[in-house]
Length: 364
Image (cartoon, rainbow, N blue to C red):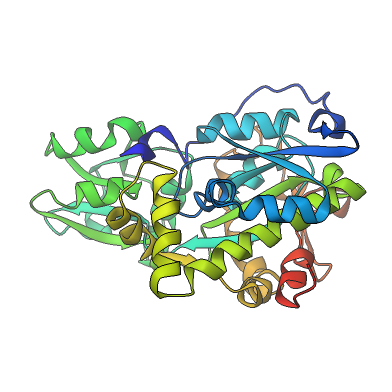
């Protein structure tokens, strides 16, 4: 499965030069026409960005706004590296990585599209029907300091385990090895990962789902994030409109039903070398914000702020905001209603609803 080459949730801290500004991410594709690069990695909620290119949808919006967009595939960690370094203008990423990578690195960035949330794609799997209160002393495989660890910690908390991960034997395991490592060794009692790896592991005898992301809806979000310095330029504003218009054109195809929807799903699956059946299975546990009105409603809600507070506290506890960060308030988040979590002079991540609202109102 080609998902193995696109590590959606691998998080690493990088030492990165911060000398590139907006000029690094804007080039001229034709006389007078700016070009922007969007980085994406393979995941059910991000594959539509490459499908925009293949289907011709993106070209329609590029022509409308006089902007050229290059959509470039990366593995996940390198895509974040390129974004933080200023080599690309926009990137697909989770809300957690938006906070603990660009924001923690001092890069001011803005989420313009809240595309979906994991609604069962991420799961805690166990042998022998183990419960959370039976995991103490047991080996748990996962990619540490990622949303897998976040999911595990939330599952423990929700199920009344006050000490969280204390007493668990967490085994940091690369996603490329985790299926074999778990299924070949019965001494590994639990594993936390994401689809399609979850689907592969669940076929093993005696393996059941203890907890999954459907129990924490809206907490593991998939976003399109643009560098704020780029977004504030006239060319960047047009670029954001191109990406938002193209995104909702793809969503319109997906929700149309019948032949148009089937054609879109086949096209989206093919950009990652996936099968239609596999893509549909992953889509079934992904809550797409296919309607701009729903995306706007969530992005402007207090609910988003509540969920992001959980994420930022997790990032701080696990030193994902930097070891020298004395408080989670040092990496602040701003919301469409003007609310700020953290110090107002330290805002590094912004949620913007304006472009999704333009789509909602038919004004793009």
